[in-house]
Length: 91
Image: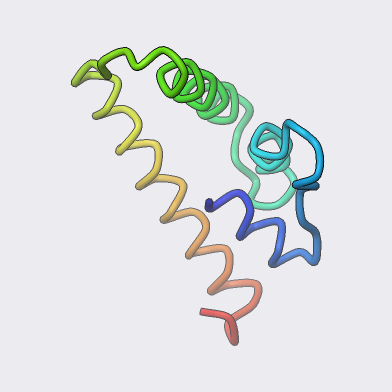
C-alpha cells in the first residue's frame, strides 16, 4: 500500500496488531506526502467501500473501479515524486 510506503519512508508504520491500520495509513497521507484533505476523504471512502464489498460480495461498478484506478495512479505518482525528491537513494 502506498500510504504504508510513505509511513515507512518517514520511519513509521501503522500498527497491524489492532484494527484500523489502513485507515490510519490513509489519514497520515497529509503529513507524509502532503496529500490534500479532499483526496484523503475520497481515498478513505473507497477503502470503506472495498471493505464493504469484500464482506458482501457485491459487484463493483465500472465507474467506481475507474475512480479507484485513477486515485491509485495519482497517489503512486505523488509517492514516487516525493520519495525521489526527499530520499533519492530509495528511488
